[in-house]
Image 1: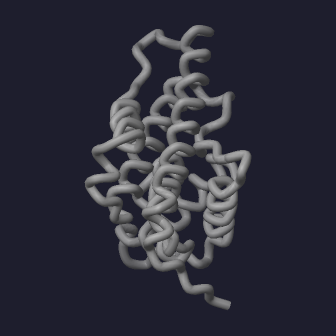
Image 2: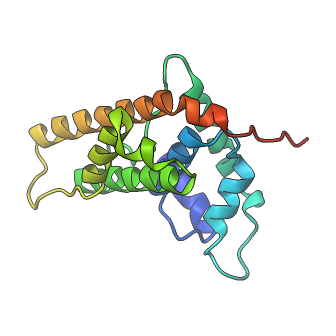
Amino acid sequence: MTHSEFQAALGRMRAPIGASEAHGWLCGALCVRADYGAPQWLAELARDAGPGVPPAATEPAVEALYGETLESLQSPDFELTPLLPDDAAALGERVESLASWCAGFLYGIGTAGAGESYMRHGDVGEILGDLAEISRAGLAPGGESEAAEADFAQLCEFVRAGAQLAWDELRDLRAAAPAAASVH
């Protein structure tokens, strides 16, 4: 699913969150909780949308993104890519979306119940601190250049690798949590 497709689905759900932030939130929560399922994520996305909002279950593409994301995190080749606007979008928009993705990731980790010992110490604490810094990123006026594009690409790779590190390092925390019951 593309960033714009997911943004459109969130708009139909009247979710008060953007596509990049919602995807980061999902990734963070999945890093911490083995029992974090698509129904929970969909309900949380729609929670603040207000009355008269179509049920989140009517957005199968959003549920499909959940499955794609979990699969990419579990992949031995770590295929996760933060969901951001494509390269045709202005660099400023992409930087803002990366910042939002990082903010969402931190929110997902925090609300999913990662213990303070995980949040403040070791490699996970370091990457979460770095992601907190990136969540405040912005592009300076007139900052669109080849060098800025290259810097952005490196920052995206850093965020992707940081999410992989968090996934790997929080394995024990996920293993200690009860697994989600499967519903058929």
